[in-house]
Amino acid sequence: MFLDLVKANRSYRRFFENEAMTRDQLLTLVDYARQTPSGANKQALKYFLSNTKELNDKIFPTLAWAGYLTDWPGPEEGERPSGYIVVLQKEGFKMATPADSGIAAQTILLGAVELGFGGCIIASIQKEKLREALGISENYEIVLVIALGKPKEKVVIDEIERDGDIKYWRDEEAIHHVPKRKLKDMIIN
Image (cartoon, rainbow, N blue to C red; front, side, top):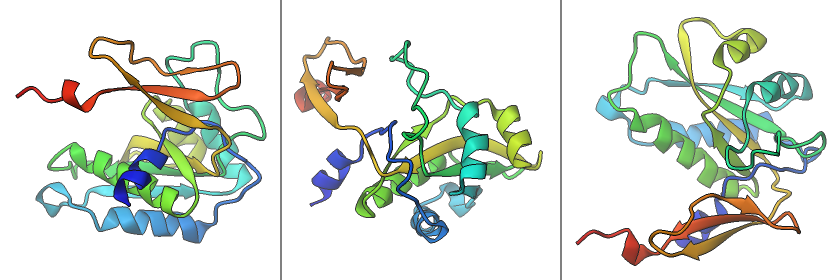
């Protein structure tokens, strides 16, 4: 059922790092994204794939992991992603809509769940440091990084009241809680 797929698609930030992702799996995820709608059908997005320790170790230090978890610097060794997809946009080939990267990223994450993986969309990126580390041409703008792997953490959705706190948090058992407003509080008419 589609709702089950959506609910299983959480922002996972801790992974079984030793559970490898293959390049073919990453290609499959990009192939899913490639077939989604694109503003004016420009198809301006390009992708940099990483599934080796060498490349993953270059990407990891350029990312910020969880803004609300201020005392957590990110996943420790052994809990880091086993794959990344860097979403790029070719310079001078602007998308007709900024929604393209969101559509592509969500499609990649839903596909990852279907393949037994999970991930996290990361927009807090040291872009120039990442560009240099990966040798990405100045002709490409770094838009997002999608961290992927076999989730190690449990993420649960907590229903909150209309004016409740929306900050995610972890309990003493390291279960990651994500507050979501009720459906009735999302509709204005």
